[in-house]
Image 1: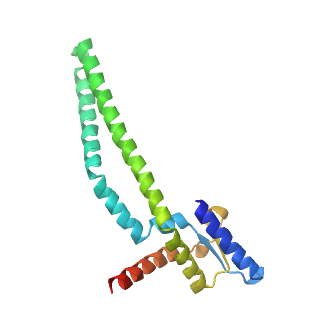
Image 2: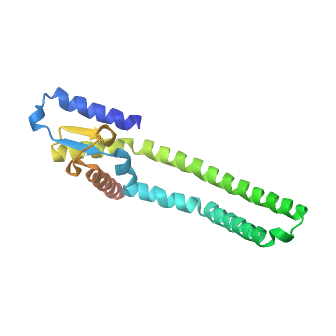
Image 3: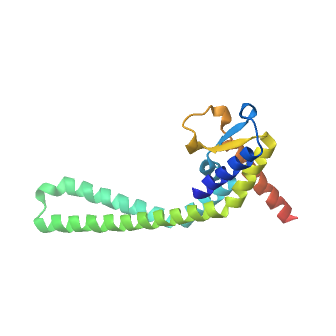
Length: 178
């Protein structure tokens, strides 16, 4: 987040220092995180994550099914179960819940780390895409979406920045293949 705020501040100072008059100022609103996470690069990372955690997802589904089966069995047989059977069933349910929670925590931590790595790896690309959109669109001021409590949708340049990220990525891939 700090990176995006710094980018916005730099752009603001750049344009203000050029002495632009407020009457002719062309403003854009940017949701940088949305632009990044809607990009083709983010989709590739998402697909990699889905493959990486497919086994964890499968195991979590199995554990959830086991828990549901155990709960149904308990509800059906509760009246005729001994205290030992109830304790054993509760213990099994707790074990399954702990396993499920561990998987969820591991996946959540890994996702957070991957998202942070992605954000850091895309800083320069995002800055270049914003610079390109500013130059092409003749913008004088770009504000972070969080800094604008209201704005007309026409001011939102997020999709343009995403498109520029995708275009720059394709151009880099094409020039790297040659």
